[in-house]
Image (cartoon, rainbow, N blue to C red; front, side):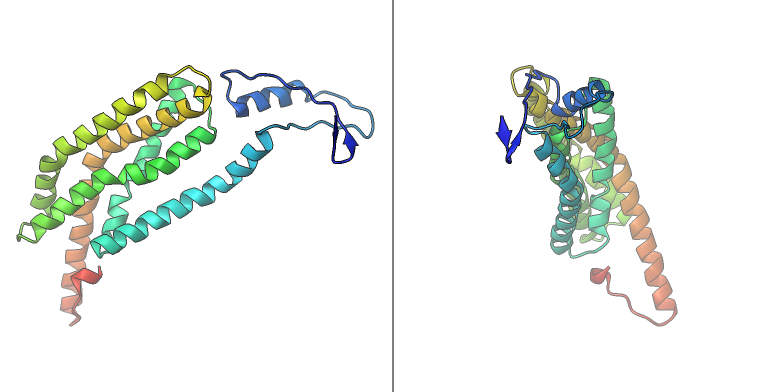
Amino acid sequence: WRKNKTRMIQVSANIGAIPLSNAATMVKKALSDLRLPEGYYWRLGGNYPKMVSTQKQIPMTILLTVVLIYLILASLFESYIQPIIIMTAVPLALIGVVISLYATGKSVGMGVFVGIIMLGGIVVNNSILLIDHANTLRKKNVKHIKAIILASRDRLRPILMTTSTTLLGLLPMAISTQEGSNLWSPLAITVMGGLMSSTILTLLIVPSCYIIAEDAMIRAKKLFEKFGFKKDRKAA
């Protein structure tokens, strides 16, 4: 073959169900001790260069996703603190992602990164249900501790129902062994693992963070009033 006015020899193979990143690692290991004449070199082609380029952009994409989610939540809840409480569900999802990938033996590839980006917008739904219902109860002069407890009780069934339907919908994709499953199977496993861990831990961590934040705001308000300052709650 000739490419960019240079002679080349192309060696291709069907990787089957092996992820592209794993196949590239195997090729690099096999050719690590290869000695070529002067002026000759080898490199991986096909979709591998595109995959490497895309993976370099993934961290910035994830960061942008988190920032956009925060801005939307801050505008909807008219608060700077409550969106942070809601978004504690995102790192909780990463726990399930790591466990699920380790248990299934899947490698980190494009499917996993896309699944993590998807999780950023999925796992916050449960926290939104809890915090929004707690805020509604607070408007009825219910104390913050009782409000978050009642919100957790009232929203437990909807959270479990929505999580179950999502997991069952992703199950066929996760266990698929057809052609192309090396991309969508890790994606489905990533979303399922992150959603399960986030759902369980959200019911424990988010209410605790809500109580801690509300206690801190009440103490700060009393401190401001003690020194003669008035603190607007909506601006918190």
